Image (cartoon, rainbow, N blue to C red; front, side):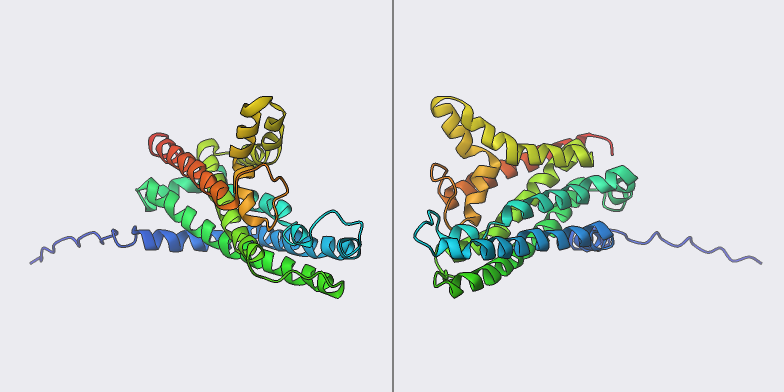
Amino acid sequence: MTTLTRPAAPADTSARAGFPQAVRAEWLKLWSVRSTWWTVAATIGLGGFMTILICALNAEWLASADADEAPATFLTWGLMLAQICAVVLGALVVTGEYSTGMVRTSFAAVPSRGRVMAAKSVVLSGVLLVLGVVVALIGYAGGNWFFEREGIGVPLEGDMLRAVLGSGLFLAGIGLFTVAVGFILRHTAGTISAVLALMLIVGNMVSLLPGATGEWLTKLMPGNAGSGIAQAIAWNPDLLSPWAGFGVFVLETSALMALAWMVVRRRDA
């Protein structure tokens, strides 16, 4: 006599597809590839130690009567190079999965594509926020050591403190901006080229436009608007104030993220 058994009910996978689980999966994916470690090392090297080198080479001149720059302008100098690394990391977080086809697995495990996008954004922005502050502190501590020996040390307060903390905010913002472009273009080289061109080249070229149009476009370009938060003394005094500029940058990044979310929902993986 045979005994009929009821088939086992399928396991409930809803818990595994929640947002905390998606964040954990993205965290593991981020740190499981060597490119992340190389990019982080490059960010520290270019952003932190290049700042120290520039400060060491210019400390004597800055202490002289011939100097026409303030020491504080050099203490976050390396951010110009660190932002390139942030763009690279932001692109790889997204486009790396598209190039290997692993993004289909991610979307299958977490059917809500917006949740996948949000998880990637949270992990990347958190890493870049901490990394940006660490890099800025390395550059400040090392560079200011040379300045103090010349009697021109800069205390970590006021605009200098805002610049150090703002370095983390700016790198996190760049990462999110690049994530959005990555989801739209889905191509590593194209994403990196597009963001760097917009941040570093187009942002300077629009200043060549005549009249108020050129002035306002220069102020509103993402790289120009966002970078002021990470500078103790603005390189270009005609740009927006640090917090106003960063607010514009946040709005621009948010709009681009919204566009990327719509594209991801409607387009096949």
